[in-house]
Amino acid sequence: MKKFNKVQNLKIDKVDKKILKIIAENPRISYTDLGKQLGLKKNTAKYRLDKLLEKAVWKIVPIVNYRKLKLITYDVFLKCNLSKSKKLEFETMLSKHDNILWATELFGKWNYYIEFLCKDVFEFDSIMTQMNQFLGTAFQEYDMLLMTERLYLRQLLPELTKDVNFEYQFKWNQPNYDPIELDKLDKKILLLLCKNGRMPHYEIAVKTKVTLPTITNRINKMVENTVITKFSPIMMHVNFGYSRNFIHIKTHNFTQAEKVKLKKWFSQETQTKHVLRASNSNDLLIYACFRSQTDLENYIIAIRNQFHNIIRDVNILKLTNEFKLDFFPKGLL
Image (tube, rainbow, N blue to C red; front, side, top):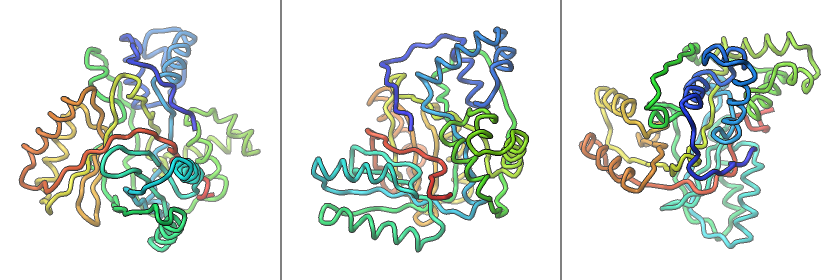
């Protein structure tokens, strides 16, 4: 996985901001079409986009519809007391684990956040047993959230482009969850796209040793069937001076009307990237970015004021060292 190319307070102009708005909607746009949108020559558009992809975007990925593939995501917060050598060994193991989508070190109540992708609860239990055995006496406790509903999702913080009067929309199909089986070729294509979502079709054809029309047809079919719900950039907001945080909110049961109110509040708030609801606990897991501690504090105050009747507890966790992000782990092959 491409490492963060860290830049302190990356500066971008209005053309760059327009490009960010475009790729937030359609990150696989061609250089030719990008140039047309911006009134630039193809080579100029290519230079601009490639520069942003190097400094502002971690990578481009397909958003995979796991429910449609009959897979379940388990979000785990883990607390453990590791020596320096054991910590390195553990993180290396996590980075290579076949069932892990996302793994990052945390600062706060928990040491790690790990998102597993499993066929069923038995597979998850087996993985956690193995992890417990690996950690031994260093293992302390964990909390598991079974995420089943996304209340809000955006990749690009509106604050970054608020001074640009430019809109771009790209229509993706509404996801459906009718189960579907993928063959080995589909899985290989997804694996390659998760490494580089802008990988040209001809390059995928070479790597998989099939014809170019076959690759184009397979990708189009996965988009049409919403196996791929969209392509999305993973932004490096840290390069713009933001900290990245999980805000884990334990709630009382809330009504449908309160859920609608939550969705509306998050859609109007400019520092939220995504919000998930856990079915096993009704907790909310918020991923948000802030330029300062004061911004974070004001965010917590605002959400407490708006939803004091349903909030039981708020736990803030800072993401520090992200060492795996893989939307289609090789174990699924």
